[in-house]
Length: 352
Image (spheres, rainbow, N blue to C red):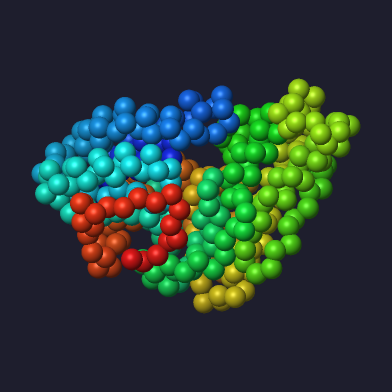
């Protein structure tokens, strides 16, 4: 089964053709990261207009790269929630139009499902996940632990009570004067830093939930104290006073603390679910080299598989949407009425 998939939930315009949920026939991504680097974050209205400019060329290139026409496509899939309203609208309207004109079934897919199913894409860098499994979904907008008994069965057992870990990476990077997006910048700076030089607190949150707002504030206060500046000093001014070595050390200390928080919660989740055979990492933050190394070292010892997608499929892309849609098909999820596709900025993951 060949699925044309479209992703436009935030600041990447993407289209891909995926066969049988694992084989990638094409994968095209146009990123807006260069546009928003100067702002340190995404501007929703600008993102939507940028999607509108490139969505059809991206779809055409995905088909061309796959060597297919509409006649070779069996279904259309699209991210419909969660995300930025304007961005989602561009993707869903395009998918609806194609499904209607081509007379193909349409599957509206939850964005977090797609990140999880990036682990099934053929990449040669990971094992095939086995059920039951735990998924750690970590991105700029989400931090969740999801329990899956089988394909398309999801139970959220842990979530953030405030900020997502990816947002925390972006904000800390801005404090340190590192570029947007924060994750890759901190990962790189941390390679040259001493993770033990600064001690940062780990939030004490009961159960499997997370909290990252306090860690973000702790970094801000620690930087101000190290630079001997008053706490009234705006965060955007700190980069003018911090040295390169201080920046690298703070990046390393923060990254170590954030990774420890994530891995410790996964250990707790495994203790609660000893039947689990696989842990999968998913979402943009799963690209972190430090997190992958720590997950392998500390979770593999528990006897479970540790899987993660190829780095290029960790962030937003359409191939993961095609994979998620395929596994909806094989588990009997009904196609979406193209005239009734709804979008939402934040909707809980479910099997419906």
